[in-house]
Image 1: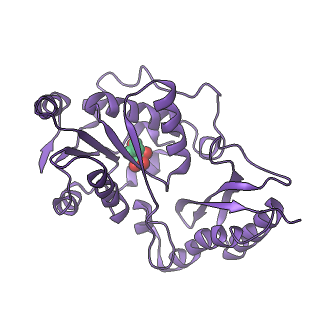
Image 2: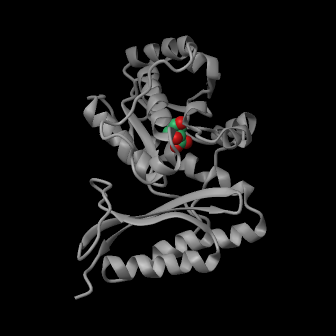
Length: 283
Ligand code: PAF
């Protein structure tokens, strides 16, 4: 596995690979890798021809942190990330510096045409502009045939899919299911900051999603889920049911496929989770 820090070196390396007829896969990450990230690499390896190049980018993108304290304490664990990737199908790790990615500061950023985006967009102003900008840059730098994104960041996935469609970016997105701990907690690089009490409370997020999926009707699903979250004492940002194709909130007697999404602060840690299920009506 090759470790590359500069865009020039990466482009030269990948140009040679492309000339040799290899396909290129990309798993974009911010490091602090856990089994969920490794499953992105596995999903790419399963999808693309053997002997392809699988690039894992590790870049803690300052542009997508709305809270500077969150950025400062985001784990920076390059050596253990390299160790974790050593046993996978990754062939290249691209770990650029902030100056390599943003040499001129931030003159151009990508925003959505609909203005402010709900949910994460409202709770983390600027987050999605920063995320889309760095993802577009990584797509242009790597020019992958396939790119893997986790279902865990459902709204990120929705916006990246929209960007790929709207800007005619020639690649295929491989969607990777959320990896969970044995007790249901969605894996996240932020889980390491949960103390034992917060760790127990954090289970309310996945529990709320699970119980909502068993209810008939939007109102019943919302009531039972928010009841669980209230009882756990987590500071809820939102629990909502959205149409997975549009990310618009559903209400009333809506039935069919829904994505339940939740975000809450559990002690000092902000967590998100989601679950896709079929909602039936209550009549
Ligand atoms: O999901 C993440 O880790 C980040 O948002 C991403 C896609 C690597 C962009 O910085």
